[in-house]
Image (cartoon, rainbow, N blue to C red):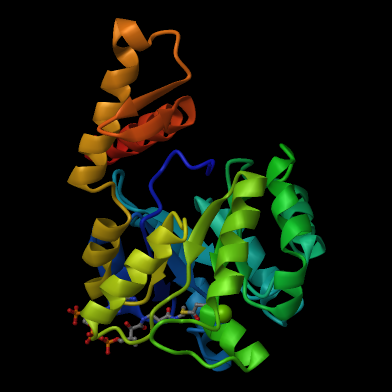
Amino acid sequence: MSNAHRPRRSVLYVPASSEKALAKAPTLPCDAVVVDLEDAVAPTAKAEARARLAGVFAARRAGGPDLVIRVNALSSPWGADDLKAAADCAPDAILLPKVDGPKDVLAADDMLDSLDADPAIKLWSMIETPKGLLNLGPIAELGRDPAARLACLVAGTNDLVKETGVRMTPDRRWLLGWLQQIVVAARAGGLDALDGVSNDFRDLEAFARECDQGRAMGFDGKTLIHPAQVEPANRAFSPSPDEITEARAVVAAFALPDNAGKGVIQIDGRMVERLHLDQAERLLAKAGNLAS
Ligand SMILES: CC(C)(COP(=O)(O)OP(=O)(O)OC[C@H]1O[C@@H](n2cnc3c(N)ncnc32)[C@H](O)[C@@H]1OP(=O)(O)O)[C@@H](O)C(=O)NCCC(=O)NCCSC(=O)C[C@H](O)C(=O)O
Ligand SMILES: [Mg+2]
């Protein structure tokens, strides 16, 4: 599945131009914060927002959420300065917007290497352009290259709507095919996959439905825009008590001496194979990680 050792249930964007939100974000129970230099920051405020990064990272405390920086595209007037400033902060990851193909990821990778950036800094890639969708396979393949830093694919549903002209509906029906492709590509590359944002941040019932939909599609978590979305996302993307009970039953059944040499057994009239045992063990490991 994913290569994450850290949970990615709730990943909150924070505009780097908002001091108040920047101060609040690390205190929230989200798994990661994305400090955004891109679309949440007006062109006239880019330099000031970039200058604020160092202070954000200096105030970082152990045990808080992972910190990610979303830079502007390298092809933009701000991208190169953003990437340099981001590398200096040694974030957990740098999120690249508007990735059209593997060359965009490799260009950022090369630049980080030339800056002698910490090798632990990962790259995350937004998938939010038509070319990015068409090149999902080659982008995700970079996840299998030990020298590449790519660790995560992030759906950018606002830009996908803008670039393709599909209609955004409450059930996201016109986006689902692309979202599913992002999950499949991420799995092929051993990457994490994050669902897109829900703009209507006051409607938490609709948000919970969208989280359930994303979880059912296989996403590891959801990108968020408002603190009120953190708890529902954490709930939706954590193993539920029923899932844990069921997983424990599968592990216990295969541990019985009678089943030691068996590839397939039945539990309560349901076929259970060793692949289900793998699945159950993974779910219990995830639940254990979240509890510790
Ligand atoms: C959408 C917002 C502008 C709304 O902000 P606001 O009007 O301040 O909302 P509230 O009054 O309800 O806020 C309550 C308190 O919470 C703080 N707050 C709000 N948002 C955040 C946040 N994201 N992180 C941390 N803290 C936050 C407020 O400061 C209030 O604090 P206090 O008064 O002390 O209680 C705002 O939520 C916002 O800017 N959200 C993020 C927008 C963003 O980053 N957008 C870019 C990414 S989305 C995207 O485009 C993804 C992708 O690229 C795509 O294409 O889809
Ligand atoms: Mg976008």
